[in-house]
Amino acid sequence: MPFDRTVKIAPSILSADFADFGREIRAVEDQGADWIHVDVMDGHFVPNLTFGPPAVKAFRKHVKTVMDVHLMIAPVDPYIEAYAEAGADILTAHVEAGAHTHRTLQAIRAAGMKAGVALNPGTPAQAIEHLLDLTDLVCVMTVNPGFGGQKFIDMTSKVRTLRQMIGDRPVHIEIDGGVDPTTAPLVVDAGADVLVAGSAVFRGGSVENPAPYGENIRAIRTAATTLAA
Ligand code: DX5
Ligand code: ZN
Image 1 (cartoon, rainbow, N blue to C red):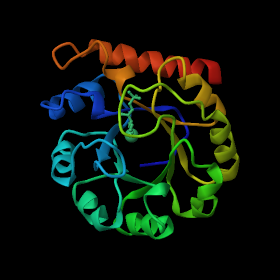
Image 2 (image 1 turned 45 degrees about the horizontal axis):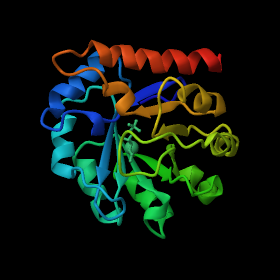
Image 3 (image 1 turned 90 degrees about the vertical axis):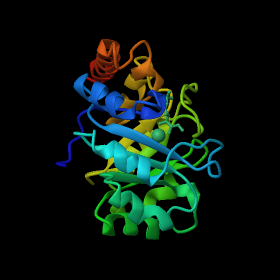
């Protein structure tokens, strides 16, 4: 996985048909997705439940690009090995999920994955300043995590601060929540390179009619790269 800062669109399968994940993953990849974003929720750290390691392992068989697993769970550490075995390329933990994020990021890398750290809207950029040398991706939440289809919360000043803090380090800035063709240019202009989008990618399409997935992905990419240019 060579590092680059070009804009990448990562559809969140939280907005896919839960009875048909394999075909949904193949459909969005065929339609131009760069990564597949997998939202793991535990009904404890966030008020919603999705899926765990056996399901994620089953998704892996269908992912040809990058499987980007976003853990909205606490605690994280007891499950790191299970997500490595499930085939996650990137494993992201919330900085709010426990007192020892430094240890968590070390453990994620030691298990052979790229290490991501996510920040809730109320958490400042400075919370991860001393973790950046252990981090491959910073996920800036632009909604309160737990549900797809929520309204974008403007975090552009946090993204700008992070972009400056990161400097030359090979660390991605990912935006998660409420990304669509209107909000994407704001965050890319501020320094983000990975755009997670659930509802804005899956709306209007299906595995039988996947063309809207492609149109939606292209609309986000075009909007993001036009204003940023
Ligand atoms: C929110 C999840 C997001 C969510 C994004 O808790 O982490 O990945 O699915 O969905 P949209 O793009 O619909 O806001
Ligand atoms: Zn997510």
